[in-house]
Image (cartoon, rainbow, N blue to C red; front, side):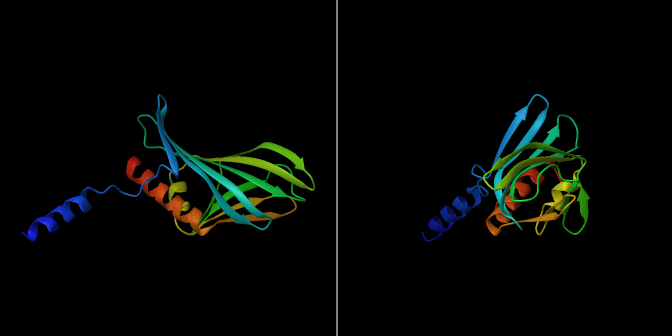
Length: 167
């Protein structure tokens, strides 16, 4: 009789799903391939909090993986498009393309949104664990570091993506 509760507990534990990602990311199958959108996360920068979101795209019938990062920054002096945007972990991975989505003045600060793309699966590994996003402007360099909560959420999302794309 004592074995029945133990067996029941083991069955419940074995059937329990992995950590839910519904509050962290969205997944959509499109005619072109699979899209993984990681909801905006807060990174720390020299100028304060920065909102960053990530989109991974795996085209249909390929094993390639494209990463797009969008970041919204506020700063008193920096305005315009950065010269470079790189992922920095154990190695530095410069982006393949970079664009300024908008730039507007809000009081004494400039608010800008930049978008950058990597066409390499190495971006998946570069975002794991300790990493930084580095934006180089003519007048300054901004280094963004994920807050602890952001890092944990990103790790959960990356684990899911790695599992689904087979990396």
